[in-house]
Amino acid sequence: MIHQQITIINKLGLHARAAAKLVGVTGRHGCNIEIGSDGNMVDAKSIMSVMLLAAGQGTVLDLKVSGDGAQQAFDEVSQLVDNYFDEGE
Image (cartoon, rainbow, N blue to C red; front, side):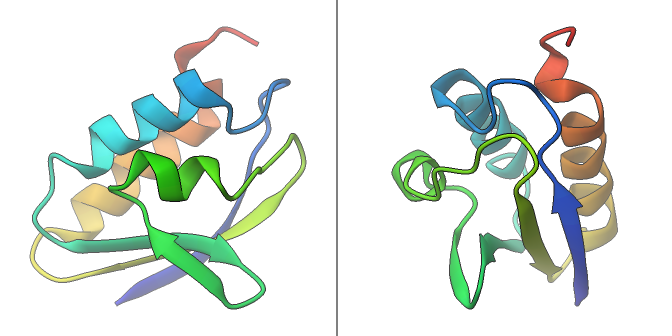
C-alpha cells in the first residue's frame, strides 16, 4: 500500500472539472484508490464522492493506493495534481 499526503495547489481547488480529470485517471486502474482527510476516505473513482470532499486550494489530502499497479496509479494521480490538473495555473 502506498499512503502519502498530497496538497491541492490549483487556484480553483478540486472543482468539477478537476474532479472529473482525477476520476478519469483513477478509473483507468484496477487497484484500490482512496482519497480524503481526517479519516474521511472516499473512493477516488467516484466523481460524486470526490466532489463532496470540497477540497479547495491548499487542502491536504491523504491518498491511499493498494493492489496491482498501485505505483503507476499513484504516480499518475500525483503528476495530475502537481500539474494543476492540466489547467495551466
